[in-house]
Amino acid sequence: MSAHVYENPLITRYATRPMAELWSSHRRISTWRRLWIALAEVERELGLNIGEDQILELKAHAESIDFERAAYHEKRLRHDVMAHVHAYGEVAPKAKAIIHLGATSCFVTDNADLILIREALHHVRAGLVGAIDALAQFAERWSQLPCLGYTHFQPAQLVTVGKRATLWCQELLLDLQDIEHRIERIPFLGVKGTTGTQASFLALFDGDHARVEELDRRVAAAFGFAQTVPVSGQTYTRKIDTQVVSALSGIAESAHRFGSDLRLLAHEREVEEPFESEQIGSSAMAYKRNPMRAERMCSLARFVMALHSPTAQTAATQWLERTLDDSAIRRLTIPQAFLGVDAILNLYLNMVPGLIVNKAVVAQHVDQELPFMATENLMMAAVRAGGDRQELHERIRVHSLAARRQMVEQGLPNDLTERLAKDPIFSGVDLESVFQPANFVGRSPEQVKDFLASEVEPIREKYPQLLGQTRDVHV
Image (cartoon, helix red, strand yellow):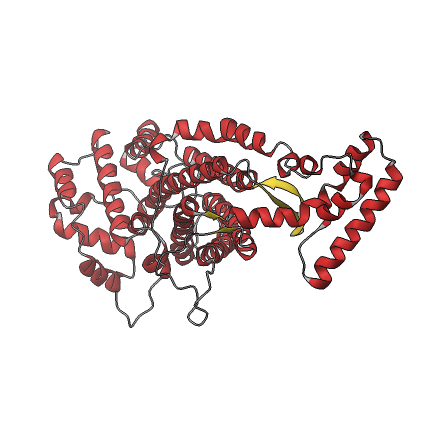
């Protein structure tokens, strides 16, 4: 690529090579040619005067695409599909007369889009399964480590590091359900003609409706589609694009939440993303370890989420049987939504396996807040040891306020536990037992275990070939 023209960073920096190649011009036009071949083959099977030698010639040149010659024809004809019909006909002259027979442009453009979208959804599914598996491994590893839980980013009750990870994982599981549904339900446009009436094909087959229906079914089957859209204008309904991009936007939503949480935890120094031996966190502040992968994830996620709006607007503003104001925007939004999500999933598979949990910092934060959280348990234990509930409450209140004042006014550690240990009113209580962090995480470890067994294991069993993924990123 030239350094003197704009380069899309989704291609040059962020997305994987397979996803970038999927949306390439070569893949797109070679898919058009496969569609023309399939159309000719089925038309021949159903009785049209198309020779086997013509089909063999088309197949022989399916991948040898002269883009410069096509550009010449497009400049002359001002029509991209017809430019490639002419370019194909020049290298397959025997078949020139039957290329695109009975079809309109959307036969190749729309059907190719649906083929590429379905393949791209399979790539996304693979990345999702890998990310789910990685987060599940992280959750299992840290299922029992108590940490501060936060509401409003203020210390609340304890959870475990692993339990928090199940929240991130659960959102990706919901995204996976959506992606699987889209893969299962995506239809083919099929052979529908200029306004969706199949009139041109009905004329080719001398008014034989059954053969037109069979043509539609067989061409779809040639590309592995079990269904075509039941009715259409010249295009398939752009509602399908909205549904697909909505599913991709959902992944971006989950990623933004995950990336934001990592950035908050990095600030607390509890969890850090991988940091390589020669990595520089700041050009000025050499000591810094910025959460740049998580920040990039949030940035890409915002981009993908923003693509849902123009996709919905396009679906909402189609005119009658066809308008062309969808063409340019779809060339931008659909590939880039997939490229953006691909880059996001790449970050999951790079970050999660190498996440660093700073156990000492996690424990320090728990120690700072747990004495306040545990005071109700302490009071109950002291009552059982024979104390007066109201008197105990007052003593706890006094000690708590004093400890808090020392923390905020002098920046000293929380010494509530020591204050309580020196107070004779609590002499009958085993303070060490009362202030054990594991006693305050509720069912967090059990919830992790149950979640992995009921929600993640079925995914692992369904996609064993997609487990254990790691990926590199362009940092």
